Length: 519
Image 1 (cartoon, rainbow, N blue to C red):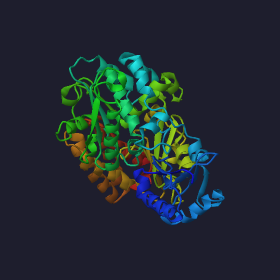
Image 2 (cartoon, rainbow, N blue to C red):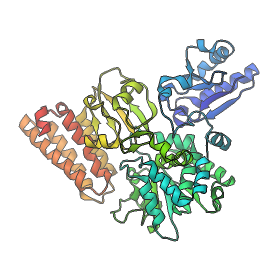
Image 3 (cartoon, helix red, strand yellow):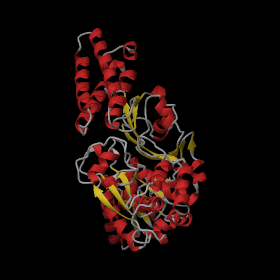
Image 4 (cartoon, one colour):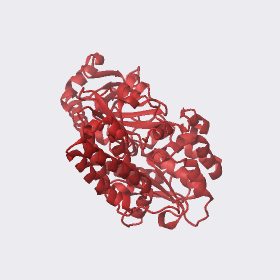
């Protein structure tokens, strides 16, 4: 019997992958067939999960979305013309959704088994670490700087500057901290990578450690990701046993080890300084900067803080070279970004492409429009504090600077799609409510402004006439300015984005005329 591949990704499992695996085992036993089933990571074509892949001389062919009830007919089809099965998808690599992507970070997605070191090394794993050991710390940091890699979070700060700062700071102890507190709505790339390709993150952190002179690291994972936590912890043990962590990392002569820490469900701990407080055993509260974490971070010592996608980009940069990475993207937005499609969208999943494709390509070509079939109303890009982008701006390239120029952000690459039934006034109020509930309480604009904002929207919607609504809209816009420019961190600062964009682009949902919303 041909080798079969079925994802063990938590989303695939949530929609029945384990039941499909059990049915395959039962059917194979009943038919007295040897079953060669590999549980792999997911391709990220989530609307087709559970998706089973089968080895053929032409390549892997796919079937999905499967249920356990489909297994008998599928096994029958595999004995004859498999392409005739109603759930046959053809060659997986040729599916338009996947074929047009530029997968660098997720090159192994759906191909390798998460905890197989042999699979990882067979597909280029630890080549970046070997190159870093050869180059030495200074040239490794230079390679990251020259690649143009920017942090794959909200600020998009150049990674190489952080590396050089931490490397150049003298201290007896330094740390690497991975922010894996992926709390934004519609985002799942970190989870996919930690569950499906954990050695990539480990390799990126090890390279960072030996480059900047840090001997210990922490991966701070949100508590809602138990499978990622378990997978990472097992992968760390495997890496230690094979010399990729410990006293002599990859033969470098330098020590580096790390551990997984689990968060307690606070959105604010996605902010790097609140995360550091949480790691220290304190309540997660945002710190004033300066000093920056690169100089005084965890336990007051120099700390390199990056999110999962940033650190996972490093092995490829070292293995292929800075110029290889720079050849992807546009302007100052270099490399690729794993965009995540969610919400009211027909084809939800992961799309890794170089910066520069448009939001329309992402939502309409990849996403296939709304799942409901109703007209598109907007897409929220960058999480719950991202701006609502109307279809009139969908031709904007997905680029950090292009989005900033129109009062929006790319953030972690999450895109939540909405149809014309969504009430934007309700969503603006929800953003303020979210801020009020998740605020650490340290600064006044965030702590109090978010609550006042909900009250203003309530008054606006209850206003008896246009004049009163217009007065409340002016107050709401002033409050957005206060939040944006007066808050200590991005939680308060970016709450203005969904509110202001909803008010600007969808004034009718607030009972306003377009001219009033623009004032």
